[in-house]
Amino acid sequence: MNTRVLEIRKGVLNKNDELAAKLRSRFAEAGVITLNLVSSPGTGKTAFLERTLRCMREAGHRVAALVGDLETDNDARRLAASGAPVRQINTHRCCHLEAAMISEHLAGWDLSDLDYLFIENVGNLVCPASYDLGEKLRIAMLSVTEGEDKPLKYPGMFNSADVAIITKMDLAEACDFDRQSAYDNIDAVRPGVRIFEVSAKHGAGMTAWIDWLLQFRTLPQVS
Image (cartoon, rainbow, N blue to C red; front, side, top):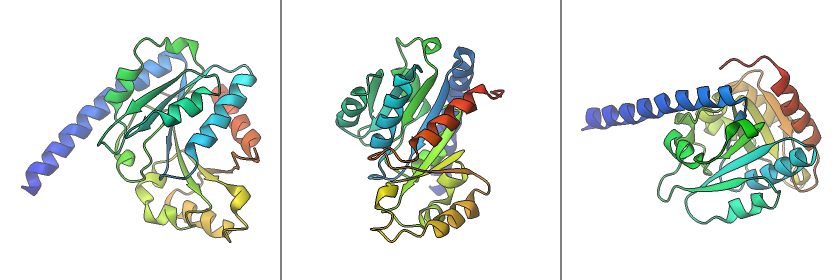
């Protein structure tokens, strides 16, 4: 029985990886940088993304977002307030986004009209680590309210990340957040990864994050 389950899981992941590779080529051909934002529930992904979309649009950059959640379109409506094109993906019982879901919800969009496509994954630090969505950058997020050991508890996700973002820095003192410990734990599972500290509520750290993202676009891209 266990062998059979493993075979099915491998088959599902292989199929997902094949479609993700096609999506990656499609994104590269269109010249759009695609980001997959992953975190546990309550980290502040939506607030962070809303501010990112708003700031980038105001600066003249072409951005859009796909939003994954089990139910409701609450997050999509919040993000749409930024003025960016947004589509909701309801996964119902599925605890992660898959490449097929991304492909389906891109229908009707001309990717060449975008500079950046943000994918807000379902709040979960386990399952999304195994599913490639064709993204260029995987952004792993943790908040100061969750504890500094989050990267050690979920090494698979943080080890696969291209960037780590620590959110809700405005609450760091109130939460007795140990910044150095958080950095050490991130580095233990993903040595040398770029780390940003932000407060989406007050805007602290957002300029550094967006400046880095804009600079990343100017670097030679390898598909």
